Image (cartoon, rainbow, N blue to C red; front, top):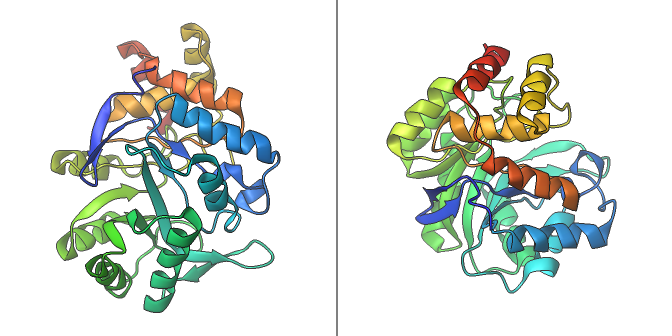
Length: 286
């Protein structure tokens, strides 16, 4: 079994730093049924067999499709498996992403995740902020975070994370409650959270980059291609290895619906980047 990038603490648990993001198990744009349902189930089971113990999901992937697949493939869940979900959005019939973050909507969404995953409480739920059209934007998080704190007091939520957040919003959230993790867009070419990552590392708080490989627009860089060729790896493996070496509190959740790509991603955790390669890669986001 691969070392999976070492381990880090999250929500009172120790998990491997290489996890798995389930978003791509749904159809294009995380909407609709999977391209190949049997392979989707096989990917989830293979991830577990290869040592993955941290899966990121949400009821709005599909919607509902991915959580149902996770339950079909993995229930009864391994005792060491950490399932992390997201709240704050929903999908309409056209697949558009809409806010769904009123107090009753957040609790409803939490209970929907519990029901479809077949669990009695959600271990970690990330509050997905949607003040801007897509990326982080200014907005008051207090009325959004308070309902999740109430859900935790009811016992249906154990730990709270925050996603798509500005550093000032992360700071405000930390004043209100213990934050289990921060999940923002970050990768080799998108490094706006460099200072935030270092701040969280000092506090022992995990940072979980979404779109670690660029998301719907995969990373493309001549420098990345050149370093990968020199190391005998794929560009995406190098991009994942760079993230693991960037900071010890980074937990990865690369997603795929392909068994071959899953194995490639996991193999990236074994890739050691020499100092000259890191220096060259650092120029991409500089």
